[in-house]
Length: 445
Image 1 (cartoon, helix red, strand yellow):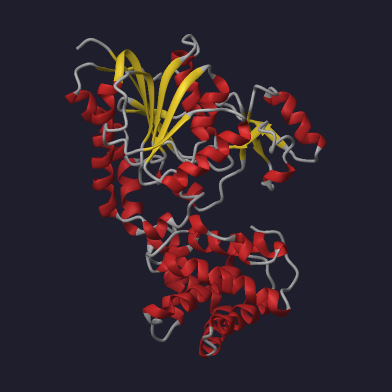
Image 2 (spheres, rainbow, N blue to C red):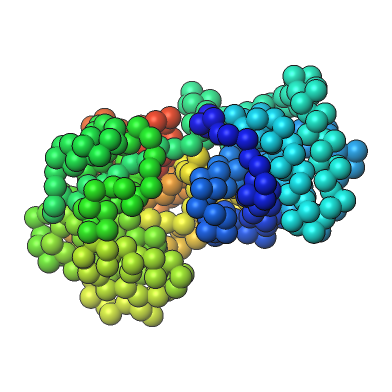
């Protein structure tokens, strides 16, 4: 639940809500995501509110859309997806935020004028005031639908229940709350105990994570600019589960100074940077998205580490020199179902029909990269998914058709559960995201 805010007044309150509507409209019409949210579209004091309105609305979207459907006499036209977004933002404020109701209603309805749709102010005002009057009854009405009450699309709810009959409720509960802010301490400058002391001196409370040796989770998220040594590369933001890739590759890379390593599908570069912080390696990092590759370059520059960065497609080999790699990290494109709490627009944008093509792409990546690995080398397969088709089933099928692939995923670790030939982590409140890892060694067939 958000901190209590003073009533919004004047133009600023309407402007931040209009900005939220503009950011959400492409999500609602399947034309974009929150990845491109421009927090600088509003004044500095409203940027936190803008982010909460956008991400919170997406997090609660199935329920908000159901309520909007009851409140409206007829749906808005497609060209008015921004007005639909304003209505959802208004409902979110009334039900989930501590903004005074009169500000939530008045400023949200008034924001329609900034979208050049003054006609919508009366509609929005009427819908939101009705929700105020009939909140309990309307919520009870829409919550008769389980997928609405649990705030997940039906296909995903069914997939989670089928795949994880013992864990699915905990997964959806975690998905419906924001993930914590976890840091990765660069041990070239500090061990994490020393860095935790620096945080405490700055009034930032945190605790050591149990599974990743470089990880600290903050009790309350903060702007990275207040983190000691951030600009100098002393610390980065990275979830604990994502940090385990370096833990799993450690036994392979630590004894081999100068190892030739490939990070396929490397963007946005967190795992790339972690490997370079930890090990003396020659790393090639490729990605098919030039814009995201530029983010990797920025990250490595801040940390003062170097890699060979290439704009390349990991399903092809035209970029490969022919020299085998000692280790390959394949952080495969996936459904993102393990990180919904960080990317809640997945609830709207991801479809059941997306899973099979993603699994096909993962299969192509595995089959294309495996011949680039030297005998005795290791490939680490990772996804931020919790769906078996992309994880355990994917690796079992790869092992069945690849005689020289042998599983070396540890099963004596304290994190995750065994899932086929890999290890599955689930998103957990105040803890790590959902992730899957499988470690494979190339041996003689």
